[in-house]
Image (cartoon, rainbow over the protein chains, first blue to last red):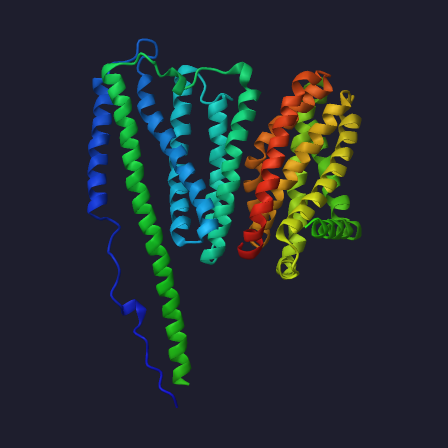
Length: 255
Length: 222
């Protein structure tokens, strides 16, 4: 009878990191908190209401960072998708899907704050305004991405599916934009972003740039943590699999 | 590659000729959708007439999703995708064959739907040239993008609910462009309509190229 040296049960092996934080992310997180505080103080209290828009100008301090972060996320997803299909490494897969999740959340926030602005400015939550419409279509496309991502599959299959959707979706962005633009071309109304006054000065300008910078820092912080969580989830799945194999082997040895 | 595409196209059309799923199920469904629109929108107030191009294309999109599910369902159910992969045919050829078969089936469906709107909605077709170009380009676009997602969703148990969620937002620009193009075509203002045709052409071309590249990883890994 051959003796099988029992492999150390992976679940009893030294565990990995107990969190996803590191010195770098703590600094980033601190910067994000300071930025958020500055944005709130300047955006809501110190900066004056706009001459034309009144208090609604304050929605811009929310809208600009969320829309920029959403687009940056989707660019990262697209690049990661292409890189995954080329390099086939876990890094690109996890980066792309992490960015997509954050992008969907920020896009949803953008649409909600855009609709709130619309209610005040236009009197209705929704108008078939080109940018709003394009955003809604894109949001739905990336919700599809996350839906596919959520379907259990082996790592390579899931990664390939996600990468394909990431590429298919991003190719559509300029086409959707053009189509919606032409479609609503004659009815183009004032949008949240077009209300940014080029002459905007002083504390208003500061509030806007502070909010934009804060948005990007928050994004970086979220992305790093989401990536690390995704990475650890994969490792946990590996451990689970090794564990199951070890158990089966042990059963075989007993017989 | 061309030969592989031809083989797959002929195979798909032969399957359809024998099983008649498109003819017996998708076509009646498409006509049914036309009737439902008439029930929902009062036919006497001219709403139906004005909305005809949009309703036509919505009916096409819904039917296209069904056709796609059928087209890739037959491949996935008995492990045919694996067999195709092992057959040594070029993935790009398989993709183009699927797109070709889908395009032909959808074009037939559109002809029947056109007859349907002529009968039920009293549409008079003018500006035929533009209408045909728009219809062909839009259909190639639907088939080209649909074949990518169809192959992606084919082996999933939830493909029936997943495919519409993936397809319909992607096809939003096709719906917009084809509808505007048809509106212009039906009113004989052919001047502006060609820019919509161009946009549909860009969409079709973009997804044909992307699909040709992506079908190999899709077939191998997804």
